[in-house]
Image (tube, rainbow, N blue to C red; front, side, top):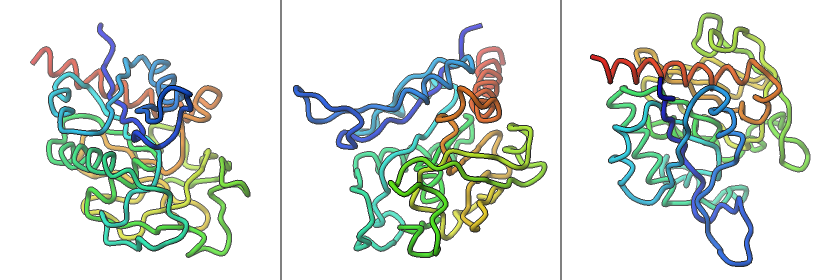
Length: 249
């Protein structure tokens, strides 16, 4: 059977994943996303932001991953644009991903996995808001190390939730690197995972065939942690089911 095709949103043209003497701007995505999907049996394709042409690709896709990246412009959720800790926004990416996710929430016809920034895009697309900087609201930042990079943190997820079923456990050890978090919850979303400090770490949408959003980065440890790889396995399996139904019914 043909591998399910999974679309992966990329970083914006100025997010700086790559350095080159010849070019200044790039559309790119970290390879661990691609690797995790390939291990799961998916056929990943990159979806760069910039225009509405992604709509023409949707009929060819069996699932979507909205990836991590820079901060969403606070103008999108009536936030504080003056916060000194904001990372530079990519308006091109904001517009593309918010439009894509809103479309997917209306249609509910494809499995959707949202990771880190992706969870925040989902929440904002559903009418929610964000805390611009976690240290502004918590005395201790357990979500990043002292250099602002990866930190392993514990997450508790709701028994019986999709994330608990997928990962096969309720207590998780996750690779974290975010400095923003969900503030007001978007319409139709349900919190299914929390960190020890009360920061929201997982969202789902009751009634959606398969939607999972995590604030951590499962792709970072998926190669050695089967419970994190299981997230990508489950997405691809649902995409395979969706593809089969579309082709044969």
